[in-house]
Image (cartoon, rainbow, N blue to C red; front, side, top):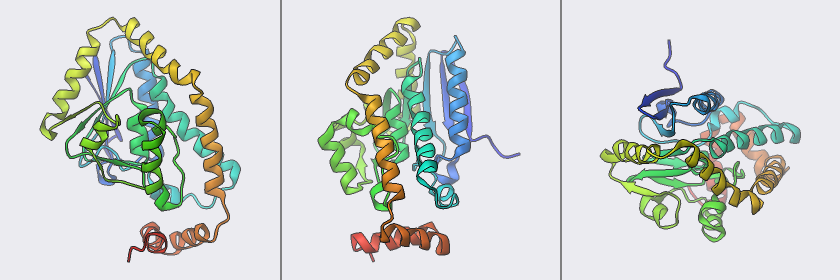
Length: 272
């Protein structure tokens, strides 16, 4: 039998979830997203769990959404795109809305949807070899869950999103507020667990109510409305009948996703 796509272990009052698709750098596919959703529901109902940790197995935290899975889905109309994008954002929001604190434990690559996932967690501890960024614009796509400007501010978010930068190092991520702490690779598990245990020492009701209060700051400022608007605009991007998008789809169908990405880089970035 194949290994589960999500590993679950309890370390005292801390439940650690490990994304377990190392061969694809923990790319987010339907099975993994569904498994995380179930694990969140179970943790919410378990009174012994006070804090959650999310990490990735193997060489990276997560390289983002599984583009190979997306490529096999064929051409979707606006209604299907809206359903897909809305569902993806709702799954990310489950981390933000979870009653208990969630800490992302990040090493190596944390890109695109992986960065979204990290931002959906309440706190993030990263290794000094971690890299962050959004490459969506290089694929002619929009950002699925527009959490970034709410965390780092509009100026920093625009620079990352407009450039398609995917090499934001841990030091810069800490400077702009993308993560809370940076530690050596060998110290990541211990440092993240120590932070989780410090939080777990406090009264669960107070911690959970405080999380709701902090989240309410975003809600009052229009966070949910902004998420819904981003979904609408992302549908517009994904269904735009532009020559470049049609060619990208054609190459993807005939030659595969890697060839399509190489074509797009050459066309727009001058990458040979």
